[in-house]
Length: 358
Image (tube, rainbow, N blue to C red; front, side, top):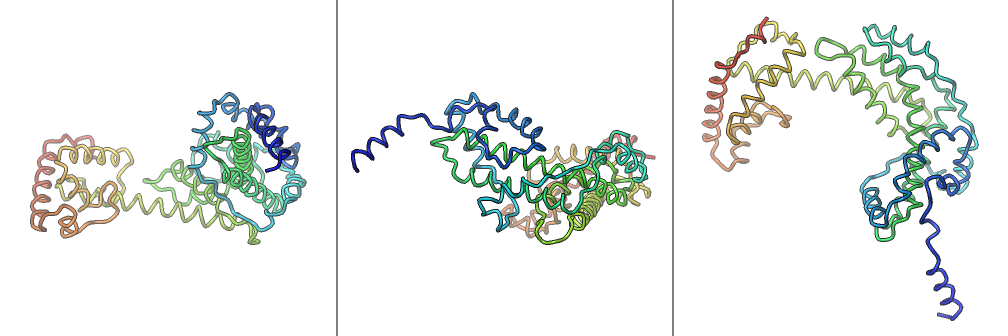
């Protein structure tokens, strides 16, 4: 190594890391110019508040934060255009031009739902529908931001944590979330219109709506904007499929528990067998069954849950499969099951189930 090279190396080593010591207020000054557009001023300001914990973090704390970030995958839908160095400038040069929220849209959504809902839920539906070009730009920006965050994440080193990179990752992820939320809120009326068709005595609108919104968010994160069709087409299938699966799984769970109660000789009446059992009575029956199972020993509890597909068991297990799991004979499993059922019948006979009747 030449003397001049050694001199430069010593000089570089003596200088502080340019990425260290940055304050939260300086994040905007260090981030790429393409992201500093007027319409993102508010979310950027909110993001700077979120990264203030990095401002005074010690080197050890930065190492811990770096390890945490490395454990968190950053998923996005890639695009070959994202590899261009000028892609960020191109995407963010276009303005979104999002329209203001409209109270009338939320009120109309509540009325169309056909369900007696609190008026505040209408606020979820106040965002106007997106134009095709707005929708595409939101998806482009969201995935590009996540790709940039993933690039910085890929070079994180816990042994040499970079405050600057961590701040940029937080910034990009937060801005991606902001774009995602704009897509979600513009499509919430779609969720309202779908889930109301699945409401019944055992599945409330509130629960289906909550599940539907989660399904919509996942749909946004998995949608490939470059395939040439509108997100609403994809979202309709995602939300409808999720609502159907939720209703079916809950019905199956009810049938399993009701069957288990009948096998324990608990008379639940014809109305309950018609699956018109109320939510309150349903939860009470599950609670009682859980308490009774808790009084069984470990093997008995496992066998009953596996035989009746209760709890984490998603299918009914055969006597032979349980024998193999427990390392005993098939006949021994049968004896343990019979003993457990006798205990449950005895407990059922002494349990006050009066409030479950009528």
